[in-house]
Image 1 (cartoon, one colour):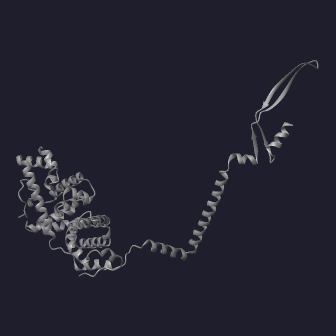
Image 2 (cartoon, chains in turn blue, red; image 1 turned 90 degrees about the vertical axis):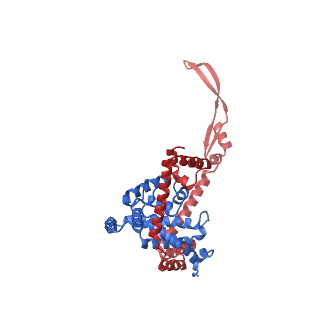
Image 3 (cartoon, chains in turn purple, brown; image 1 turned 90 degrees about the horizontal axis):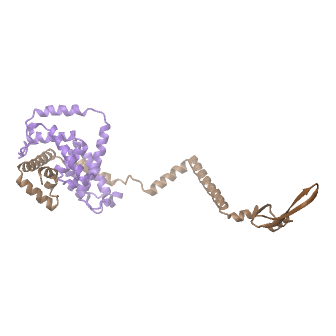
Length: 190
Length: 189
């Protein structure tokens, strides 16, 4: 059993067990954060901040959505702030990515490679397109739910989804057959 | 429903969030149309493939012990956001430590109070009735005063004709602290 936090946070945490809350949502949130930012260390930091903010403002949660959806909304906001900061940093990320891909290309076209290639392609998409792909395919959200979560209309979500898929299609090698036109399962799918 | 309409509604069709009528029409169309069947199969396969790839890529990830501990430690610390009372106290403390600021604040308060008093006095003066103001300075009366005017026609220093006309003074003004009655009497006489 986790130690119950003291002071002002204790009041907010009275209604639930902090450790249980972290256990229930922490890992799933971390995976989502990793897919959004593409960096495991940053993902840990983002989830840490998300959970701290969420627990401190637990009383402000009105229960209009599932707790995880609410948490994910906080995570998205923090990721947006993180990416704005990243843009200000001056270093050549592209060189690092290209070098990694050259090494990766030597590997077999196995499932792990497909997964890694897709995750890297995600990082090359715009923030809006990355969010919509993640919410649609990883969080299994419906169009209307994505619209609520991102604060845009359903039409905008559909448009973003369409262009995000086109972006991925251009970034993923044809050999992976991810965007097979005949409806057959791509490589890496059982 | 045609292919174009169906493609527009494909995400909602897969979500099953279309209206009952539209969902039925879309289902009917896709049963007949090979191209749309293929589009549905492609979307489903793609979604499955992406989901599996994401799961595979993130399966080993879990919150580190350090992160968990950091969260608990952050919650143990008192809130970093000061309350309104704390903010006010801090503000007062800063002011008392800086006599110049205190002087400026007091000066501002003094100016504010004297300014408001002056403004109030002016406002009181301006609200006095016009008749009352006039009573102390100038009287304007509207009393017709009948009088007579005599016109004489002369020829070689002799008055040959005389005309008498009645005129009236419509209004007259008087200044000073005299009562209107006295002033009026003086002018009339």
